[in-house]
Length: 243
Image (cartoon, rainbow, N blue to C red; front, side, top):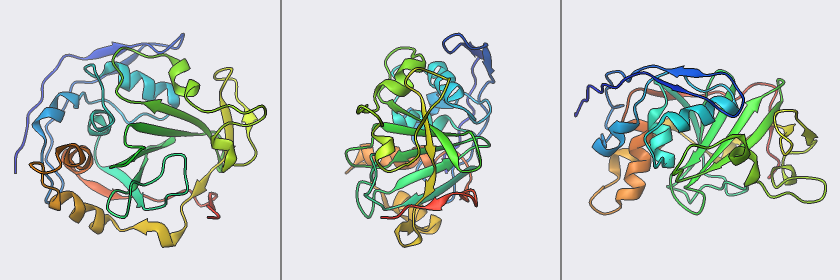
């Protein structure tokens, strides 16, 4: 399998009024078993720690070479990558179909979710843990063509008079001081019947033919093409999504 030794200078980025954050140079990576390694995504391997907050997600995006796609962001994340795949369509970020799951990626302080294909393929959903069962919700729309601020993380959510589009499913919305539009709400995990095994996701990635459907294969490569992927676990305090 292809391997790449990626070299770059350390980057320092700033989000809004927050402190500067150093992003370390990239490291040598080996694709997960059976994965296609996409050379175009190699530029996205900037190194650094996994983002734990909405601000750190924004900092990582701003440190990437512009324009930034959703697969570029996913490829940038350090490995091993801890994830859970679901085929659930009941979400503002639905799975694209039975072979295009929604992927929850776990970091020490946040849950990030991306979709392999379908109408939500250019969205990154962020749930920053604020308690054991509540998260600060945010959303980034790709591609990102220039550095962004906190505004971008909250402005795309639809705001009704009392709740956001997230609050239609995630109950108990409350204002959060991070931003005038920031809201926290109850966090859920997908019900068991919608879960896709990691082996199945890995097999779909390995079977993808970039000569036929390159965009979808690039999305899979961003997950499995840059190192080990392992099963994730939702916090025990999360409730099952009721649909």
